[in-house]
Image (tube, rainbow, N blue to C red):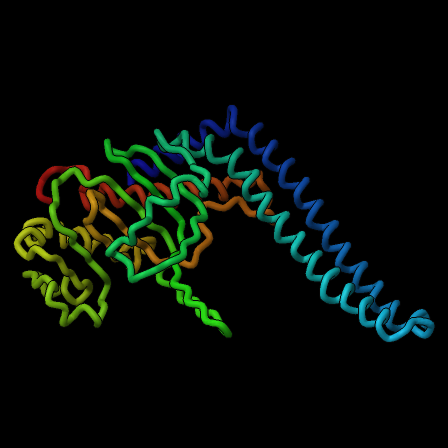
Length: 313
């Protein structure tokens, strides 16, 4: 895409002047957290060595059984797990810290966008969207919000689960994990239109929409309370664009819906998006170009589907 090239050129030009100093700042932060991580690993090794010395030495001979049990519990069930927990917290803290530094600069190359605190605006997901099966828990990792082609675009890395607890057990089912993009719909669509990828449970649904494109129906199941409106929105050209989009590597197995005044696009993915890794040199330009490329790919959905055009989609 032309836009991708221009952003890459803009990023590299900025790097040669101002951004290089920023990357050095990011690397200093990374090295600090990497030092914390290494020290916590050393702590784990010291605890394990101490446990070995404790068991192998004659120190235990003078201890009663209760004291021995308490020492063993402390070493193996508190000391070691606690040290690993410290490692996890260090990585989490690094990700939060570095994103607050990196993303204002990165997103400036893409226009009017910002990365929001994942804890802000969580209630936007309730009541549950018809696009997904029932869920009662969700984890919002990253959220990027802004304006693209005069549309409000909300990009979320999210995990939806259904959790059911009984007295003796807890069952957790993942409903969706990946990227959810919400875009305000410029068309006035009165009824929900749900487009899902080949779900057998919808084949006999009384609200299933029969369309004129057999190839499209092999890929997607569509249902709506208003068959006429659904066919009006899902034109032949729109169905072709959606088929083309579904063939893109970054948009595999996508589903989408028109509901509650929004267009929702869900892309299942196990990838950890928008990350600046602790174990990679922060001076590496590939890290930032990949993040920019991922966001641009997601924004290109607007262009591919022509969601900014009031042309009957």
